Image 1 (tube, rainbow, N blue to C red):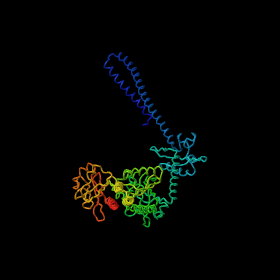
Image 2: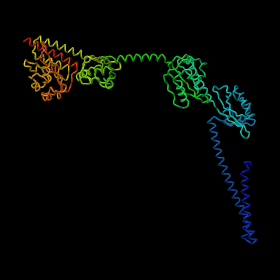
Image 3: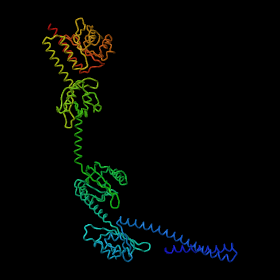
Image 4: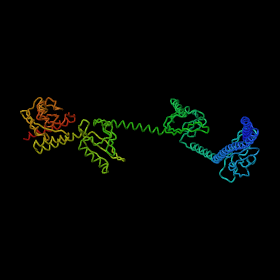
Length: 611
């Protein structure tokens, strides 16, 4: 049924039904309710008037509803039309129809650069509006649409000789179900410019890598087959473009043991897995020789949205060779440093240890990694640490470029050890140098100086007591935190205190005149046996059972004694060393004290000869 007949027929149908129902029901009700003919006639007139009134109201109501619905529909159509026009303007889109001639919408005419006088045009006119180079293709496409009902999709340029910027239009068309030819016209100039810029960018990209001799670039498809191979890749790997194209990545440049792993990693990436990071790797050339490269990879998609992998490789073989040589040199240097007897030491600008070789542990007893980060001065005897700190401050403030001197290093067991420390300032403010064990040499020097001083004192005929006390003080200066004492033996084999500068008076009186004998303290037994006696803990040593109380009261916890003898080998006295804590002497301490004991014996014998 034709749409324009629906509303009138609906109205006529409603009126017919209402009229029929009114007449039949009205007559029936009158015959039932009224018997007087005159009254029936009067009521018939009234019924007719009521019918006219009600039917008029019914027609008004139905017409009003139809008009209201029509108005709402017209409003929706108007709004949709405005939205469509706005969308067409935003999309630079126009529409057209073809009925032997083109009928262009106002938007389409604007895109074509034509006025309303060209709202209807022929195909020849349209072709004249287009660029000559595009006319034949557009004509063939429209003939196929009109004659064969093939969908139309073609882009063409407007013929604008006097404009520098080209206007590109996209023509689309199709035949609908009623055989009508409809289509759209869209300005795609910006899209074409973007495509041209992209092509130019890609062309520059390709030219860049083609002309870059040190960056080998290869492109691979989803099957890892070569789709791009620049000249630098040929130079690096030895394959020509013809040899490489179409072959798989792993078959060309990946060593055999790594092929499965490389192929698996790339496949995982192409399927959406994590990308493989840039890294140094060993690949191979055409002749099978290895080549080290730094390889970075990127994933892109071609015009058909297919993934492509691009690898950019830089030859680092020479760098790798130099790096290996450097590592070998560093390893040799490190091995040399670790085997040195001298301690190699580095400290930062704040005086904290930053490097120590293994000789540090052998010398100090401290583990190297436990010492790093600690202040260097904390490893030295208090007075020497203070002196070293002052010199380090002078270096830090620019007063001197380095330092060198003898210092007493406190080992892990608390024993002082003389070392020769040399440090030089570096440009970054840190200091580096060496720390050499100088203990034995220093002790020999001090012993020699003591020997010379003793001979001079004897030559000057100084009193024996002064000579022996000077001997004790020199010895105490060499071994800090000890107290020295010299006892002389008389013909009755009694020991008399000759020098003890730092022993308490009460203890001096307690041991003066003790009888030499077996197990009589350290000195008594040493004078009796003629041998070295060591008591590292007086509270538990059997030789000290009779003197333990006096020793504890004097703050003495350990004692060892060296006898010195005359030319006939008889003990004429002892040199004792006391500690304020349980302790045992080192071999170097024993050698040093034994040397001083010999000097004391020489002084006693020379003094006796001068009487």
